[in-house]
Length: 355
Image 1 (cartoon, one colour):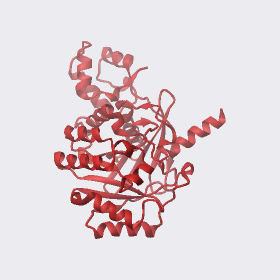
Image 2: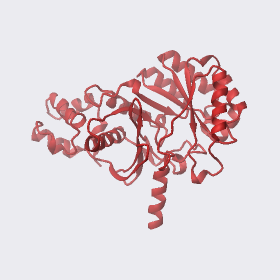
Image 3: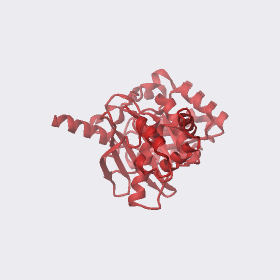
Image 4: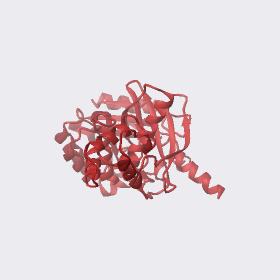
């Protein structure tokens, strides 16, 4: 199977072409057609010689994702369901903020982390996405914008879609370098956020890479008993180890960490959990931001319900009173399949029923 051309950094593409007898400047030409002009076929690269084009066509594809479904919310959020060459499906989401357009990308086909409230883990991990398949999600969204919303561009990226990014670490890192490249999509490092459920060794490794990319931790509980109950990864990396890794990260990078906290009715949304969370953060209170997230219910996880607006507000106010910098995340796409992985899961079940 041919690989996606988007999986190569400019340096890697240059080396690859030179090793095959091409001039090094060809790589910059190809890169320009891919990321500035965003062509959909190698034949559109008009200033690239035929030998080089033939070489590229023999080894790579430009379009490896095919759009299956596009859902548009009343708030302008768009959720794309893409099919991969091997038939697997992934989700990508375009969200609109006052500061720009953000794309949430998927890094794996399915997820093995097994959070008990999450739609992404309903279907276990089949494989990792390549760096090219992750990059192409942004390219596809940008091509949509080029066609229907000329002048708009993807300005921010969040790696929070289906899968655990740090479980696909090498492809993730290539992806980050490619989209950050000033000769490519030129998305600033501080406009990129990677979210992890807390794979501790990779947090240290990510800190040492010092990319200046934002880091978010899916926390969702302030004590080990509750976190292990809803997130099995806590068995491998309990909160003491996770918080030590977070302290290392902020000391090494001088970057603030975001703690994501989904509020589940009568599970983790009481005042006592808010107070425990404040204690857990402790001396890091000036180095973290807590993002309180209203839960998007998932049909397969009916044991979990959305916290009431009153409970959300009370949790927020308790944290604020303890000096914790926090906010309640604005919701996107609540009138479509809002939960991450929900559209994919529904479509796979629908296809199975038709077989």
